[in-house]
Amino acid sequence: MKLKVLVALGVMALAALVVLGCRPEAEEPKDTCVSCHADREVLKATASEVKEVKSEETSGEG
Amino acid sequence: MEDTHGKVGCVICHGGDSSAEGKEVAHVGVVADPSHTSCITCHSDVAERDMVSLHSTLNGFKTKLEARGADLSEGSLMADAMENHCSTCHTTCGQCHISRPDELGGGLVSSHIVRKTPSTQYNCTACHGARVGNEYLGLNAGVPGDVHWTKGGMTCVACHGEELHGSGALAPDRYHNSALVKCEDCHEDVWTNTADNPQHEQHLGDLSCQVCHSVEYKNCYGCHVALDVEGLPCRTTEPSEMRFEIGLNPIRSSEIPYEYAVVRHVPVCVDMWEFYVEGALPEFCDVSTWKYATPHNIQLHTPQNESCNSCHGNADVFLLEEDVRPDELEANQGVIVDQVPPRR
Image (cartoon, rainbow over the protein chains, first blue to last red):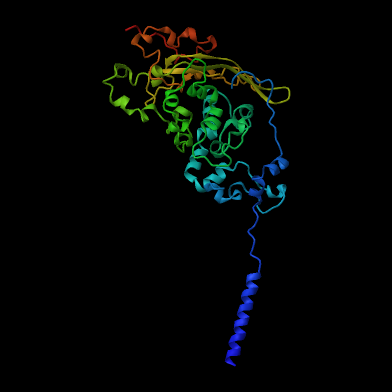
């Protein structure tokens, strides 16, 4: 009887380990700053270019 | 990302939402240049001092304009004019340590590395190029570069390190900054051992170092500012001149005790701001247009220190009345040399 109880506990423990092992690892949150700003093609596609307009009437050294 | 600042993460300094997928959502609250507000979190001492530094406040411009009678009070026409033509040229932490100044188009200098030492090329001389940069690097035709660069390979911050963050007090201008660097900070031996140099023995303390050790430098004239037909700020200046002038020291004090100093012409003129305000500088003559200068083109041997009579009896190296524009004579009374020191 005692042996049966021990075997049952062991099977239950094993089952619990298997269940835990199968659970998918929690994913690290995605950092979109790095993923976008490290991709030149993405930056080119999404850039909003601001062109500063300088006066043509400026002359001489600054 | 390997940089210490990279380990902190982007959002800590710039704001925004690093978990958002779309650009618009991710950028809500983003500050492109968070400089003083973010840097102060970890670099409180430096950031607090820098916030009142001359680089950040441009207080030197304000000092000189107000000394000439300009009304720069909030909401005044001159305050608006200064906003158009001067105020964009200030720095922030990022515009020295991470990117080029916005005024010159911005852009990261070394990816997003936070450089402890700003770039001489992309930061310092990017703004300070026309005069001191060209002098220092030897980019004026026929004029050698400063020996601290050509022989010593010293970048700007080799001398001007912590000075640029300021002392924490609002300085009126660069020469009245308690953190100001001086030649003797390194060349103390020049002051303590004059026996081997009769010129030092004779003139130390009477002449600024540049009188004997600088060569000709750029002088600028006739700046006028306005808005063009499209409302864009514009300015015109007269051609600059390479000259060397020794004048009376206009800012003589216990800190700057020299009787004679090298002086440089600045491009201010009495009608500089006429587009905005007629008579904007009513006290124009209260400040000289030939100002105390420290040209960054130091040489050991110069025409001036060849012999005593390279200067004594030589009117060419002194700022005389005939060298000053008639409408600026009054402003420069304290600078014009009345009598050339006689030949020895």
